Structure formats: C-alpha cells, structure tokens
Length: 271
Image 1: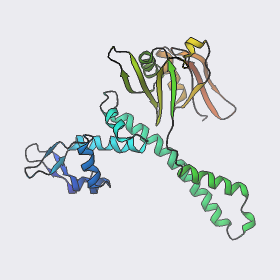
Image 2 (image 1 turned 90 degrees about the horizontal axis):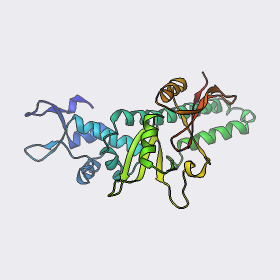
Image 3 (image 1 turned 60 degrees about the horizontal axis):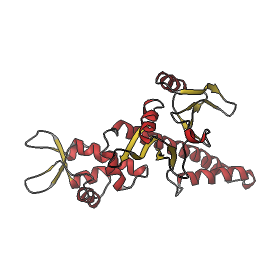
C-alpha cells in the first residue's frame, strides 16, 4: 500500500484509506469494494464524520486474503466462510498464492524461451519442427486454460478425526469442518497448496479403505523439502509404507497410509 494516498486517523493515529484510494492502490473498482461491504465480506473499520468508508491495515490484510482466494478459484460466498475459520491464517494464503504464482511464472518463462527460439528460426521456416510448435501450443494453453483448479474427494468413517490427522501428521492445511446438530461431521476440507481435498463421510456407495480392506487410489503431493517433510511426519506418528527414495522418473518420494488406510505419496524433484 502506498503511504502517499493514506492519511492518519485523527482519533486513532493510524493509517487509513478512503474507498477511492484503496481502489486505486489495489487495481480494484470502487463498485467491487462497495459490493464486498454490502455482502459483509469486507466491512471497513469505520466511517468518517461525513460518512466515507475508512479502511485500516487489518482491512487491507483481509482484502489480500479475499483477492488471493478469488485467484485460487473460491467463490465469494465460500471466501466469507473460509475467512471466518480460525485455522485459516494469512501465512497459509500467502503460501498457496506463492505456489500458484511460481507455477505460472515457470510456465511463462518456458514459453518466453520457446518464443525467442521461434523468432530466431522464422527466417528459415524449415528450422521450425513440429515438436517446437506442439510444445509452444501446450504451454500457451497451460497459461490460458479455462480449468483453474481441482478438488479431490476422499471418504472416511470419521471425517473430523481424519481431518485432524491429515493436518497434524501429514502437514496439510485445515479448511472448514461442517457438523450437524449432534456434532457429527458431515463435510470437511484440507488443502495442499492451491489444491483442495474434500473429506466425505462413508455411506451407501461410498466406503473408506478401512471398510473395504484396500485403497483404490492415492493422493500425490509435491513438497519443497522431501526429507524434512518425512522427518516431521514420522515424528508425528505417520504410518510409513515407503521411506524416501530417488525414483528413475526424476523425483524423490516417500509414502504413507493415513488413519483409515488412504494412500499418500509426497515427492520433490531430485536435486
């Protein structure tokens, strides 16, 4: 936020922004900020004596959360629910945003390199191979795909216990947990970076590996430091099925079963 357009609140001696200033500094529209206020998503800290909306630093932090979650594919009604969850911290949102941004930057960098090579080769059309063109088209589509995110669903007998295990032992980020009037969990969520995983209670047609006696799929998650993640997870009680190993396909990975037998693999590129 630029301090040039901000001013000090007379009664609290802190920096605040009017709605027009906040819109200009963030690239949002005044209309969008008004809408966020009207639906209770971002209600300004207070108003001036003349009735103008005044936003403070806490409002700015919440606005960042809103924008980051919007970019990660959350609808406005879900963002309000997520922000009211005490487990959701600014650091988690920044980390997810960073993962998404790094992925986009990596694809853009590769595309820029390919376009540079194509530009050099344009003087001699025969030098343009089909492989070059196919790779360029693929990376263009990766940057401009209508598919923005994915959500997986895993079935558990005890959704609340599974959610706690995945967060505490395997290091996933806690999302919302919905219960009925009796306190039974009806729906839970965890996330890994920008990927959301729904936790669904077992029912007719939906069974946990604990009921089936076998897992029919697995979840694979990329981590920054494979061996450090393995150390923390095992210290927390993870049931290891494969210790860290370098695979011939270029990753180092380890595997675990969770509290109900779901399979999880974690990997990072080999150094």
